[in-house]
Image (tube, rainbow, N blue to C red; front, top):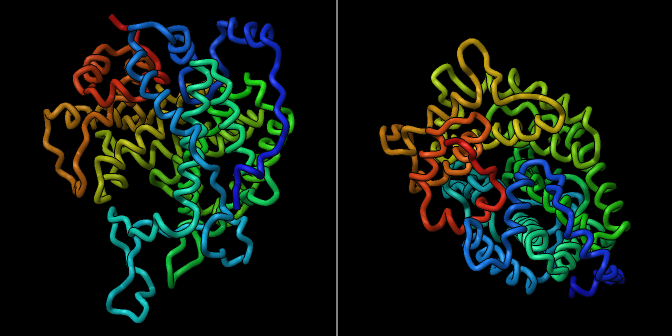
Length: 409
């Protein structure tokens, strides 16, 4: 099936004057996790021969031009069929579960934490979903910064194929995500696979200024995400994931809150975010700032950073409903800042990481956390630490276009 041919909606460009008026606006975009002011400053610097954003913009536009050539992806492209018999249902395998060589047919599978079974990449929809969300996010950022309508047009087409076209759309559920052969057909933990929807939502917010963001696309995406939010909150898998105590629980809250904000359901977002200090921070963070549920993993550094960043994203979302999660903690200090301070000396090499880490420890992965913390806490030490850890790869990263800039002296 040629999926590109399925996207046949006629898109009519607005007049030159209307487009000029749109880009003359100086108001930051209405986004939820990325920093709109930084993105606006990056857009204003576009086309200049030098500047703090140039390296990252050049890398982003290279990626966007590659995304322009990509074919749309869809859940109906997979070779297998979900247990429901409906190819429009998403399905995938649990990444850390492998065939048991002592059992006929290798089932039931056994767990090897941190080691990804190659089947995870060839079975189901995980890879296709990742390509779609990554390309849309890239194209949306590139469109906002460069004003090139071809980027927005391509992103709109990719969204239409994955979510809206009757022949290729994904049903709004993850009933069969991260199945374990011989054990189950899917599980609540599989909801982590749409964690990237937090980026997709900000991308859609950036695309709204484009003439390619049609009324049909806008309404269709809201209908789809309304159904998915309902599934997240009411399905057995959704309820299971809500009850997870580690990074899965944090990621679930981010999905629900960001989707609710996108749909204008601030009361739903506020309900979720109000419970973060008690339901997430107090359970996940110890008095010394450590996160034992993440330290128990075989990629303990990566998971500790992942959950710290998730808590930070929850705090960013909280700002949209009038909640300050940055300074909330219990008497023992179980809060975001304590989690950051626990990790910092290990990132700087001042202490040796004492927990299991089966993949190389990348200390520069803490830069986004430190850059946000420098602004939210007004702490020069976080700013200096982020500068120490910044390398050439970090300079090229799009994080430089979407993270807040520190004004500490």
